[in-house]
Image (cartoon, rainbow, N blue to C red; front, side, top):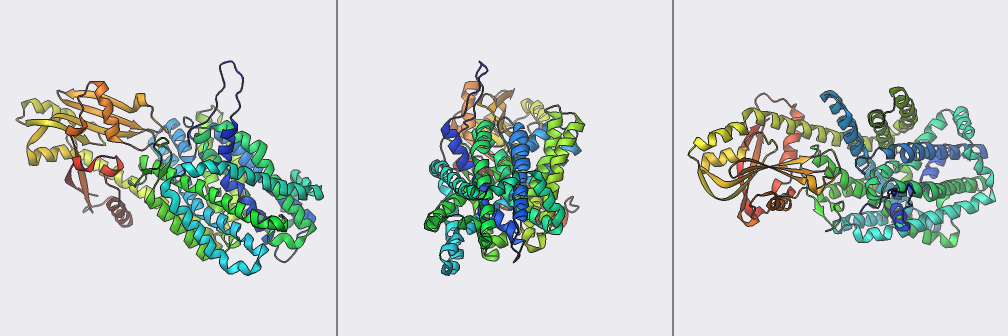
Length: 632
């Protein structure tokens, strides 16, 4: 979606965001955290087993949920973290780029990159579990009305999930316009249902007082620690507020949270608590039992729509993170298809889509119920919370000039809260929490291996390459034949002669009359404006160096970018261009610098990477590829 962020006019007055922007925020940003009432409080009550919780225990649990939402979502993310935007973009990778920009020293920058990529990998693990638990919990509502339908829950969930991933290739533009109104109806409905029950028993409003949560933790010890592992389910999706900031701007997200989403969630949680106080048997599914019997089927349909929207937001986020990782050099080239001719951010990655679908289906068929999936949920998102704290501590000190003691005190306090939640969820590792950790660690191994391998190839390529200055100095004295046409050589190192050019001279003994050395540079910014996209330098008669800059949220399109050369004094004719690429044939070196398993993994990733022609959108009928053998 296009950015609808608002700015203050010159007069100093504050301009409020439009209603359309606020509705759009509800549809894109709050799907995940907005569907948490389906399973969060139910998961908390499950720790009491057959023992019906007392009024004091329920109020204590509600107090923990309220203060988790207030401290982590409202105070940490909405009020503080969202201030750290990278030219309007948010998310842990944008925060990582901000931190690296302020860092000095190679070791510090590498540490920051490791933290940022670790958080992104954990988000992938969270992205696999969210569609599974959300869709399952919504469809399980059928059992409340028709207990005999138990055997149909899994097949229906699988059908919904397959359909959800099947439509990804068509893009989310048309469907996205429906997201907002559906979520407005969703939040309005769950808030109203909760308000009715709260009015019947306002005693649950005592949960606003922090002492009830503290006393619950003091008196229940181990049980309270276990409950914290379920309380964190209420704040899953907090990272989405920050990650989606680039679509709407901070103000609409803050206003929608403070004045609509947060109150609706609290009313529903408190309403569920009031219902269980009055009817302890409702603990089996407090969300749907909060709904009058005649409206439950309609609520099941609405909840299913809301969970599909929540899943869609995370799937789109996974596509975006994957592209950012590619641009930053942590993943090999993958197929990126643009599903909109006007919106750069609407993309589809078929390999990532297939990976997510298979992962979600495997989780649904393995865990079978949302209650069982709750044991696998939470540890990934709390790990991301911790990574965000470390990066924010550094960014707020360097960028916002917070003194180190203040930055450490504030973010250390948030880190302590996040660490408690992470420790509580660590108890789930044996029961299923290992799933998102395994996904995150596997992705971490892949990304670090790819980065190390590419850096090693570049280092060895520099050692064996000819400096461009030396080549240009010798060219006038050489007897190289210049032939008509234009040759474009892609190179990641603008100061060295591309290997493809040397191979072309060696085998064909010719050089084109017009030569372009093209280097694509990824900035630590979301987007590079048109005025910064292209930089041209004439190196010799008929030979130019072209630097193309792209932000980490953009997908390169070399032919389109080169068309701008006509306005920069270069006679560019796309029908006269030949693109020369070096196809690297990787083999294991006699004394490899990578371990055996990393070498094996890197070679597999390299062989399955998308060809440069497809990634850079170069016409395949204008490409000449020359093989280069590289030992790593």
